[in-house]
Image (cartoon, rainbow, N blue to C red):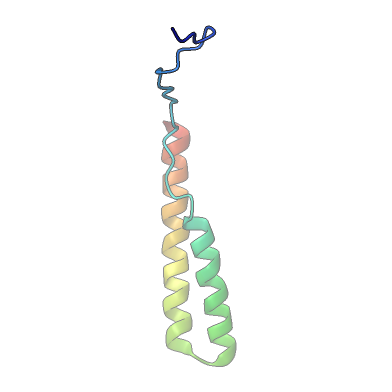
Length: 72
């Protein structure tokens, strides 16, 4: 007969995972900000403006989700 030496071999460990939102929102916002600055330097106004808008919204989403996560 097999002995388990005090450890249940068939037991499944379930760990509580904290609620996490937007792990990459801030990184994406920085990426779009850099893209906007590079596009502005190169004279691509449309790309720069669009990239800044995307970066702005990603930062807003990140801040909102961070506040919600801290409250919960």
